[in-house]
Amino acid sequence: MNSENILAPSILAADFGRLGEQVQTVAQAGAEYIHIDVMDGMFVPSISFGMPVIAGIRSFTDKVFDVHMMVEEPGRYAADMKEAGADLLCVHQEACRHLDRTIHQIRDLGMKAGVALNPATPLDTLEYILPEVDMVLLMSVNPGFGGQKFIPYTLEKIRRLRSMIQEKGLSADIEVDGGVGPGNIQEVLEAGANIVVAGSAVFKGDAAENVRRMLELLK
Ligand code: DX5
Ligand code: ZN
Image (cartoon, rainbow, N blue to C red):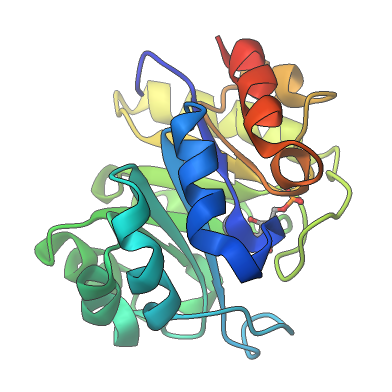
């Protein structure tokens, strides 16, 4: 785990008409990760954007591009995502038939590898893969849309995952994604998360100011 907590603004809630500028704004305000939600219309109902958009915003910042693949069999796009500028590629356990292969494919390409779990997916599924990943993303809403309400039972899931990581002597990051904002960020951190995704809480209103306010709470 990093000693510093990290804010990962999700650009799904940004103004796509000026995406580069918005990425630059949150990066300059101090966000360390840019959370990029890729949706294929199959794993989740919506379609968001893919490689060309990611490549298009890459020149606006050097911050970590944290790409959340809500895509069936995401290994098919791992090399293209690296090429587009992804630093960390996170794939859903539920979307990978051969999760171990996909995780190693990502690492062999020189990216950090993350595994994401939907709210209802048990932590047991991580038993063997946990030592192989840099990050676990716990969804705190059902993936597919921004602006949803945080599911309260996921707090207990964060706590249990943090214990699991500690018991195994590992150092994986825990990223929490969905419905997080100034009102519940502290609870999420106390439960054991160290990377917090925020879409609407950052991009609704003054993004730079929202980032600064949330960074204060992350200290
Ligand atoms: C949901 C996405 C999230 C989403 C978060 O499928 O994975 O990253 O953009 O948005 P908020 O913070 O608005 O819940
Ligand atoms: Zn996400």
